[in-house]
Length: 273
Image (cartoon, rainbow, N blue to C red; front, side, top):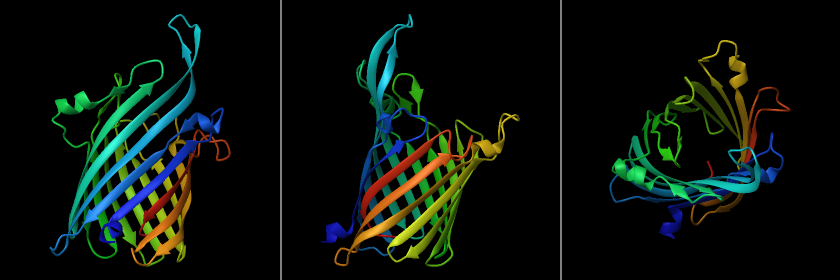
């Protein structure tokens, strides 16, 4: 029973539904498991977690160098992550390691283990959070660029953010993020507790500096909306069974026909908040 109280699980998937020939063409299955441990030391807490995320694209056209059609193949890119976190109130520190694999049906599977060994298995991500008071949290995230396959690199990412809990119903969050693909962007999120068993979330993201003056910043905007519904509450373990669903899409060129639209859904076993 003590183990179950400190154990979280989430299983889900997402799919790209805009500009694809079929909903099954692009899928993003994911699973994560987390476990926490509270020693007999005041304000100290340890957390451990593992996750699997993947990008699957079916029926990719295969062309030769002479532009001759060879047929179709499936593409799978996966990320296996392991993380540890330490909380000594009011500070939380976390580290995450990520192993990438690429499985191209017409080639051999590729991973980045040799690349990680070259850098002595240093963490792929570092996170820091400071609890100012019961309502305000400050955070920092640094994610380094890592080799993916023979030719690709993951994005470098740095982010600072703040969250503010207005009351038991309203929650706000604001992030500033810089990646190796843009100059910087702002992300704003809002959560509203409609009922004891229902949470609604919405978000907005936009770049703040645009390298091309001919391209409006409004074209970089993305919006999101979703909700979480508590299906079952277990009083003994203090854990809940939760259904989550969300939609995220670009505003460009218009809302009804965006550049991309992603729908995500999952089932979680954790505390509902």
